[in-house]
View (spheres, rainbow, N blue to C red):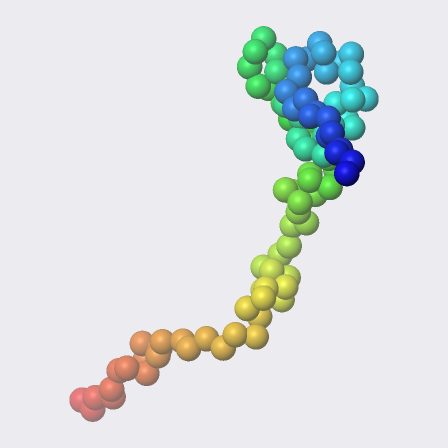
Length: 91
């Protein structure tokens, strides 16, 4: 039985280290977001283009949002309009 050892990738980098190891930071970002620190404070995140697209997504207008909704074919029961509740009165 063969045991695979998976190397644990670093996810947090000091800015100077990230600059020196930029290729490694980018390769790691494909697997998971990478945090960049400056003087010990988290300042930036590098993430894959795929993850960026998931987070930012394509912006849709309201019509497109409703058209792409899984509830598109749901029938709604709307409450009666105010004028339907009023009765006519002769003066």
